[in-house]
Image: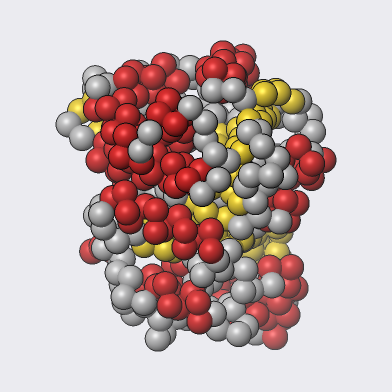
Length: 458
């Protein structure tokens, strides 16, 4: 009954192929929430694949209807060894994006795990089946070696995350007693780089909106009217240029952190380099001057134009278009007041002479969340992972993508410890999604050591 024995057990499960084979069974369930034709498979993932597994580990499991009609159920699992012990809550999602079957490379299928070198291909391998399966398999190894955990654990597994997690916030808010915990420790998203073990203590949030300018019922002849009638594409382009300068610096200053980057965030990002397969795309001149690339992504706000349209790009005609449209997005940290983003933009456009540009279809993704990187739970997790892996673990205060951490912070009051096991090149929402085997193996080792350590003092 030693820490090394627990890690050895988890490693043997991984190296023997048993973990890969189990993951293959999970991948074979086409649990895409984005296609109503697979609704039964979404349900089957929870009821047939996850519930029996958790019950074998001594969890009391419930599968609950989603509070929002039309979306998939939410599974909870609770294993209480002693109410006086610390309680961990973990989270995952069993749904995937669409398979996109016809777009995968020859010999690959979204619903068949295929091993090619150091990659395990299959839909959900990285997002998120492979990640929550790692969490649970390592837990199983500690139970096998110690016979108990030495702490209490709860799990929330949803199947609507790829549709924006509707109902999750309402569900957690209505079940605070059932889900009460001391900390959230879970896995989703990518590491900072493929070979850098990483902890996120939060994520950036996102706000999306459209800018539109509509001037006339239809286009007018570019020869007869060009030069004397307003071109909406030109006006809209100038309005966007007023929002961010030539190098991407945000000019709507209400969007950026009003008090700058907190010292604790700067400290963990000091010396942090954005090195990855996309390093050649990092432009040091783009974005907020004076910040490192890591600070720009993990500690600041960004403005992105996701799409623009005017006229008929697929079949241009000699006409001044009647309208122009752009879909835009803000990524932000908890240091900005996202409730003020749209009013601030309206004031900015009006002051800049673009009162005719409309702001429409405002929507939010997952809200920003962050636990102070100096929080004892974050530090304790880092220390455990470094002990298990024998190398540096990078703490990132706000991962670039979205995760529903705000739900657990707002309603359970827990600190956040995300341990991402994937990487940016995993193609998680496109064809050829895959799990990187070395990172997955490190995740198994790290979790086995962490689960052991969390029960060691009890």
